[in-house]
Image 1 (cartoon, rainbow, N blue to C red):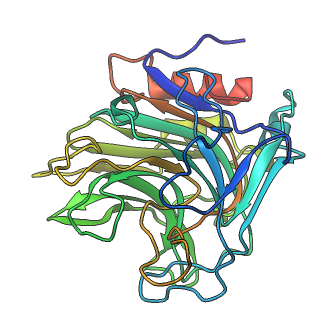
Image 2: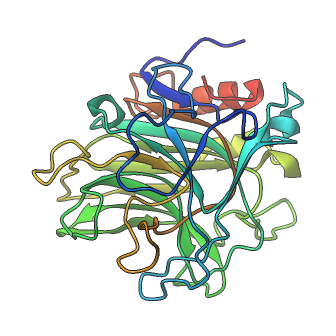
Length: 312
């Protein structure tokens, strides 16, 4: 078993058993006093809450937020690590469920990396956005946001397809700063690989200008050499990143499986925008850019973690 990677901050394995053994809270704003933090961080102790949204039958077309059944199924087997023949821990399936971790400065470093295993539901509608993880503040509809978000969303160049994209504040607006290419990833037969499949991903940001996203699809026999080339690789000149700890309007929580924004009208209590649909497992957050020269190197780290069947 490999050792914990330097600069690891939090590690949510998301392998908790189904309810009632694990507490799942109904959508609520604010969090009820005394509620149990059931989504355990096995490294840093930054535990979170499991929430289940009310069903959202009517999409928010103006903001391109999808409908959701209000499902959060814990302890789903097989989990996402079966492709590696490792210990097959269960994982959650989300369709209107999410994890909310209370704000902490340690969860919002200037430079960071996010690592996760994810299997988007193949029935995702390509006209909507789906948030895998987000840490922004304030958690409202104000354009004056801080922090970042990682989404699957529409590809303007290929209607009907979804691509990974990163959102940050740019020109005073929380918007896309990096959008992936649908035709970037191809298999040995030169066929485009659907991104709606089991994916091992790592997002890295140096805290200043350099942002990269690395993707690997283990269940199609893809060579690990794909980790030599980032799926997203951009440098943003004249850019100032503001982490989710500098807003005078307050800090927002860390979310897995939904965005931090709320539907302005739909739902009582308010419902989260951009709920993810699919399986998520082994989410790890680091306080450094894993691709930086002072680290072991992103290829070494990612190969080691992928082959170990988890993020450490």
